[in-house]
Image (cartoon, rainbow over all chains, first blue to last red; front, side):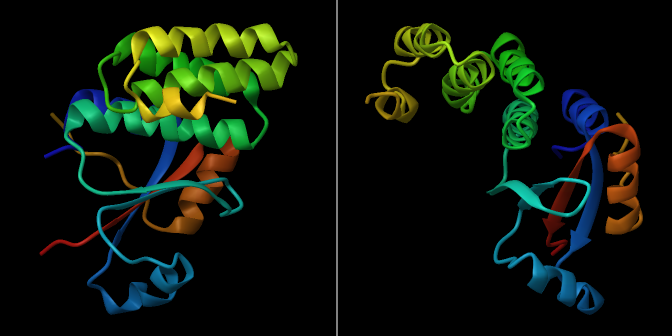
Length: 146
Length: 32
């Protein structure tokens, strides 16, 4: 019920090359073992060499899946040190899905990706001050303390 | 509404990801 929704399909096809694995098919066992698969839904983001960059478990409705997927790709781009691409994707989450569960995390990482690119503390603090205002009760607001 | 065009193998998804500057999405599911 999640995948046919237009925002979900659009995000998957724009940002990823998608592959599905049925965990009840015996011939899939070697790959499932390689992935250390435990529980479905099990979503992974890999680089083209097969290195896992992000993962999450559990069902999400379309309104949450699309922003989670965009944030997941942003995390992957950040780990690949593609800071500008990462920041643009986090900002897309905030612009299109400001009330999503993943929005506070995206706001946190807007600051991280901006700082990693510029090395300017002001870029980090600007994003994190915004996080304090927009998501005062979030775990990500706790995590920005140092 | 239409369905996602899932690739037929992980290797194919990785090849397309490399060619098009994409990342690979894996969805492990249980149909039951």
